[in-house]
Amino acid sequence: MSQPPPPVPYEIPSGVEMAQVRALLATLRKLHAPVFLDIDRVPDAGPMLFVGNHSLYAMLDAPQFFMELLDRKGIFVRGLGHHVHFRVPIWGPLLTRWGVVDGTRENCARLMEAGESVMVFPGGGREAAKRKGEEYQLIWKERLGFVKMAIAHGCPIVPWAALGADEAWTIVMDRDDLLASEHAGLIEAVYGALNVPLDQVLPLAHGLGPTLWPRPVRLYFSVAEPIPTAHLQGRQDDDAVCWQVRRQVEAAINGELDRLRALRDEDPMRSFRSRLLKAASRRLARLESSSGPSRA
Image 1 (spheres, rainbow, N blue to C red):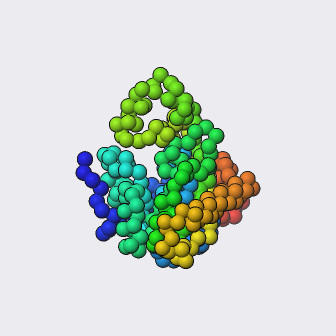
Image 2 (cartoon, rainbow, N blue to C red):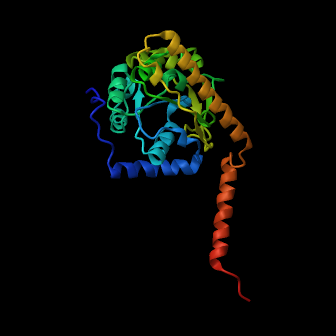
Image 3 (cartoon, rainbow, N blue to C red):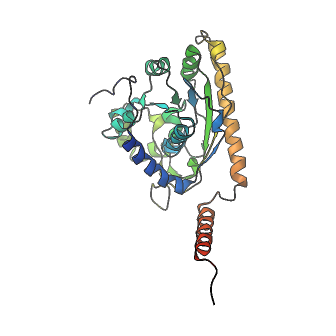
């Protein structure tokens, strides 16, 4: 299978391609009614490093945040992905077309040197392969690479948080359950062939009814204050400095998650049913207004 192209130069998708993706996301937006807080905190120009939390399966919220950044700030963010994505027919080329690159330090450096803004999820595949009870936990292990990259290039880190997607599915069997089942041998063989660690075995879950289709939960996003690194440039090999910055990023994301939980708890439009009823009420009001007063 061919290797993905180098990260730069890169030509963003055409107007037709953008329209197709916008149509798909518009449908999903009707279902999930995303709320975005403090997008204006994002600097107007890059390079910058967006750091976020991965939700279960890592597929529901990131595209919405990506498009919001493009629409509100004019920033086409380049994502870093696990190398296994690029081995999958259709899926790999699709990610590449939309600017995602193999998540190596070399590729990240090339993007930043070209002035591109980059999105990374330090939790990687492990954070997307959640166990039962791990909703919204940051599982970053000992990773410092993303901090080192930001410091080396003196670019700000923009922490952001996403809430909602972990309730779109209910985990039936997580990684531990699956590897204790009669199918463990097959699972180990498949993940071994893909060169994916067994701590990233995806759980078996259901969304609407018995299906994998996600429940129409509301999605919430927020951006924290950017964390500058220009004053630290040249100190990327100082692990003490890197750990200090990493802890700042973690605290910022967890703080935003707490803020979003509080917002969700008070949101009268949190449930899909409430949103449907409100939409129906608005439609009825428009119909009554357009019909004018009744005549005897």
